[in-house]
Image (tube, rainbow, N blue to C red; front, side, top):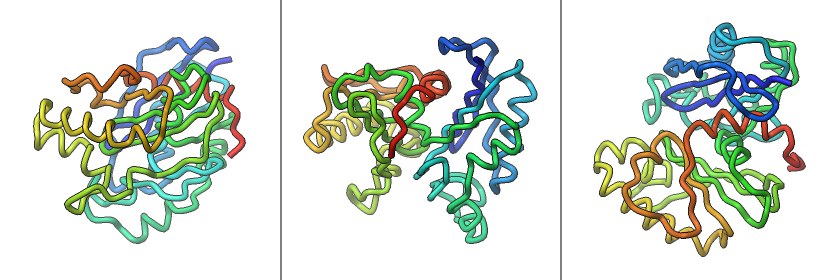
Length: 246
């Protein structure tokens, strides 16, 4: 059983094919996320990645935002005209809202498909399925997923919650702040945010991944594990074993 696993972000869309044990059997392909990006063009990017891959039996797609039962309730970047944090296009926003991504990708590939929030896919790659485990992804913004003894909890778009000075967690911890502050100051901000959220979640283990986790200069605590960004693809196999009751 081979899985085409695609990790979709605000700046890049990456994919590879994995064997049943979650090992990559092809080099990852990364395509810069094009804008503007209606759903139909998004599917075409997935097809471009698939065209460069060996044969596969099923497809997993991780998408940022509120994904419920494979349907995009909302997504933060793709309705924007020129990329993350640029002007939102009302027509694109309507096109993405309530878009049945699972049905569209199944039609494009003729294979079984699972579409989840991208942090949920990353978390599936690393959790032990014991206790309350939380996944944070540090990328264009902040991704979050919660697992209780391996069962995926209903998704919360915590990234939209206000923090301070008009910022949400997305804009407070995201890539733009890493560029503005530099790695050291940004890492201290992440440390303070994790400390503030620890009593909110009461996690047994927090995993921190995403493309910007490699820039962290501060240890985040004994209950925190930093994971490689490739988890966003490896998790494409593991999500098929998750309890998906939502």
